[in-house]
Length: 353
Image (cartoon, rainbow, N blue to C red; front, side, top):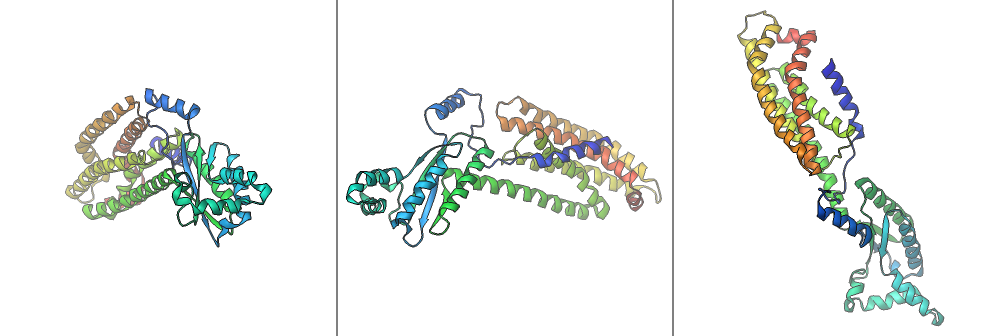
């Protein structure tokens, strides 16, 4: 009952897990290089940046309305907390238009003159593509957490859709956006693979043990370390990212090994026992034969992962905590909870007997 209660408590922490979508911060923050980088980011330069690509629809860039909308758009995104600077053609075009306004020169005329010499000007080429269909705006943001960066990107996307809803299409681009997509895809694919492996291995256990009941039993100890890992991540604010998700994959593979040993021996004891004998005798024999080996392998895994707790690398430390915890829970699930489940659940007890 206590083991089951611990698992329930761990499971309640799963909704608290936060997913990392932007791996922009240094992994090791205690080194001299990381401290110097932090100083530079806070005082001398911007931390990271992304681009807003505006694609013209129906020659929208040649209209005065576009440049008015663009000016208001950049003004709004500059007011978003966390954005340090915005680079674009807008300041140059409006500065020239202001200087030449006495003779009737407007922003769209300035843009037309600049774009006609785009291939000759390297500075303008960074903000305007050769076919004049797309304009690039570079946004510099402060070094923030993953959630704060995601909030900034969503605000920029919302403001862009409102400003250019009909005449231009706004998309975010750059290395920051690429990392965002790849990180999200990697984490989601790993989670899908994890549960697919859980299903396939349970099916294989049914075939190997030639028993539907024993195959389902193998699912019980394999779920415990997974729930424990995700629960610890939720309760102790360990973010879900491409590195920490590996802890669940590794622990699942190791817990399956222990389950195969125990259940195979249990099936052997049931087979060689006399007809009608008590299932408890088979459980006791299986425990006596396999427990020492399972405890030994778990001890090796636990102390190996325990050594990771001395690392200054945050992700390595987290892996050590997760794998060490999952290995202990997997052992308890195999040797304590699963036999107790067989003895207490009468239909299962009868079916195995």
